[in-house]
Amino acid sequence: MSLLLLAFTFLLCRSPCDASVEKERTLAMIKPDGVFGNYTDKIKEVILESGFSIITEMVVQLDEGNATVFYVEHSHRDFFPGLVKYMTSGPVYIMVLEKVNAISDWRALIGPTDARKARISHPSSIRAMCGLDSEMNCVHGSDSPQSAAREISFFFGEMPGGIVRHEEL
Image 1 (cartoon, rainbow, N blue to C red):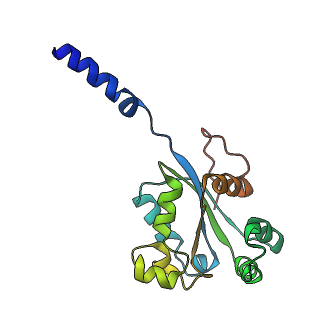
Image 2 (cartoon, rainbow, N blue to C red):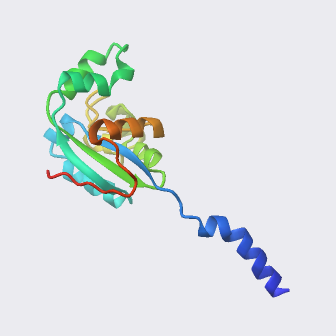
Image 3 (cartoon, rainbow, N blue to C red):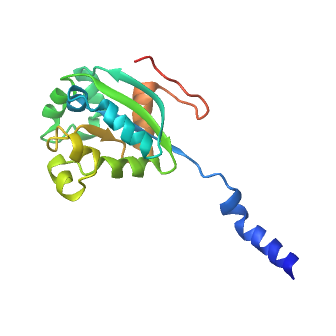
């Protein structure tokens, strides 16, 4: 009977126990106010303490054309011209993060879009730590697997799963 129980347990645990849980990647950006406010090292520390791996990173100065293309889904919104101006006001720090549930975990870590609300509802979030308001909110995070793939490709081109690139900073 114990052999049968052992075989049954093996079959039940086979998928969850043996299957490697697939990691996902997401784009993380420290916006100009975060870079100017010297929050980059603190944010990277929080990222690593939260179990993320930083696959690659670089500093970029967006021009109007790049910022317009990157935020194209917001182009019809009233705040779009201000967003483009803000995103081109200084360098941004771009990272590709990896872990299981990277997209949702990064979004949870950064907190609500409006940093003022984040300080109340999510006081431990990155936006509560360094953001100012709904525009100058310190960080960006992909909101879906499709956005993550597009945004990572926008900055880093195609990144095959097994290749790790690390730009000189």
